[in-house]
Image 1 (cartoon, one colour):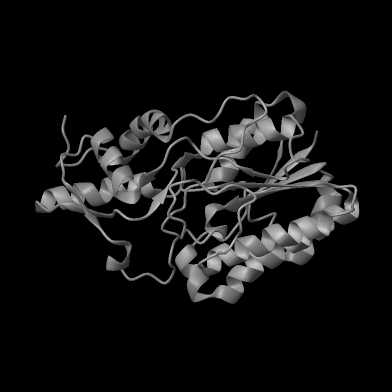
Image 2 (image 1 turned 45 degrees about the vertical axis):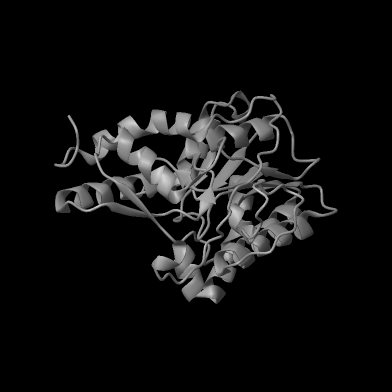
Length: 306
């Protein structure tokens, strides 16, 4: 099966390409990796010719504008990049009878629930910010475009991604914790925003498993996250401990820092069962694999334990 990945230069895109290279159903040549140079969200008119030239059978759409504060400041641009561009790709796939998998986000939900349960795929979507609205528009447009066509659509929602690439939450926390420790100050982190940290390598494996099992017919929407949940402050404590940084984490409310975007306070997704019946591992177990490589990459600084 010829599979193309948009956003192949990003954190998740690289993980998807790596997972697909190990998948037997992608053939000898492996996946088609489209970075921004080949697949530009600001040039949707190029999507059709790109599909005709590369001739994939399925496209995994991982490209997105994920700067949530940027989306809040420029909602029209967010809608164009995350909504209209996805709609254009879906329409081009529908015209050619190609399958499409769209990577989406927990931020299509408002995060206002208080019952402690994770959001299910069939729960009502009600985004609380421009990023969530733009991603939901992309979801809806993809489903509408491919309805009744020979191509099929699947949607995979996830949350709080971490892994190699540009600085992620763990990398930022290590740098902030080291600086705070040098100043003799606590590390301040948000204690009333919750989600499921998800390792991109694990998410990529889940997407590959869903594709291999042809699991997008019923239901078409899947939630794929590492097991368990925590607050930003809880995640920061875990990161600091793994990095050997002896520091007190002071919990603050989300409204303490003024931001252009308002993230959902309860961003927890209930994972849908994978075809194998084996769920993604707990987020702490994924962090245990990831943290040593990250710490080595960032190098030592004062304030850490030897």
